Length: 217
Image 1 (cartoon, helix red, strand yellow):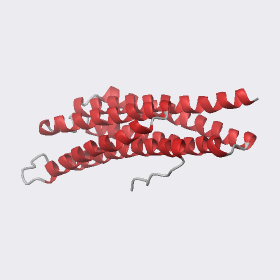
Image 2 (tube, helix red, strand yellow; image 1 turned 60 degrees about the vertical axis):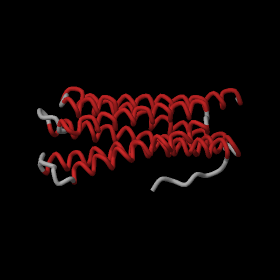
Image 3 (cartoon, helix red, strand yellow; image 1 turned 90 degrees about the vertical axis):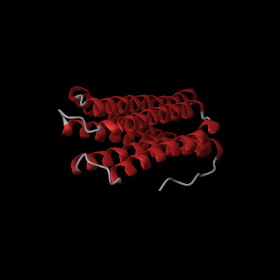
Image 4 (tube, one colour; image 1 turned 60 degrees about the horizontal axis):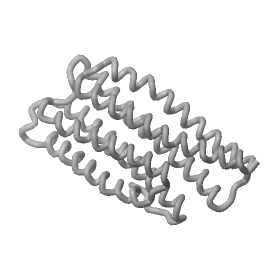
């Protein structure tokens, strides 16, 4: 019985890692769709979010089932409680990717990104992919050292977000109101994607050490 119990705990952790892969892939494809006005790719990101939601429901159901049947305490209880919070963060990361894909779909057949901001959006996409990949490694290895690195990676994303916002507000902006709104929204989704990844890492720190790290506002 105890072996089965711990196998089920391990399965929850494996599902969380797989979710980081899913949402990382979704964000990568959403960025490409945004930059290249790729409608088919945008539609696929939107449709594939159901698989992220299904995994979210599965992890949630497994965790609640173990809480009800096993009544865990101490570290095992911490695993289940933090898993429920991490899976919610990861599901929202999938939603952030979907929102970016929807911006690409809304602007089709034009690209939502003016040429002068393509490099900034590309950098934000790459930063998001690196952050979520690290989050997966943090979960898999319960690596508190790497978890701390995500804080610095998030600083990079925050600076790119500020850079994007400065460009939109600059007096030389000549691309109109609608692109400005789209890019403001896209920038916010990239920034929130990274914030959720940092939240995941902070929950792993709590899982390993029992010490709470302040939440991101």
